[in-house]
Image (cartoon, rainbow, N blue to C red; front, top):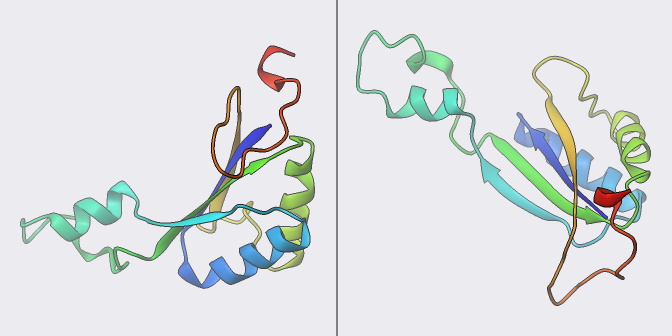
Length: 120
């Protein structure tokens, strides 16, 4: 199993990304409001000449999508679907996608347990 995070820098990309995940049969997706450190510092700074202050991005502009995949091999498929839907993470400023191995998972929607890729 793999834990996948897709961090999008523009809220307008969320629907396209969710559509790509749906077409890839990824379920159990969670979407979080998120912000970069630059956004946080820029909006909380009380210094009038702070170079991060005028960045002009709202605090909820970023979104983070999280999901657990049964098969880590699907990472490339998801990236391809994202590109097909107009979310090219290789373009500067769009966002990034990472995956991490899942050793254990407990929850109401616990996926089938299989061999952990962490020990492979």
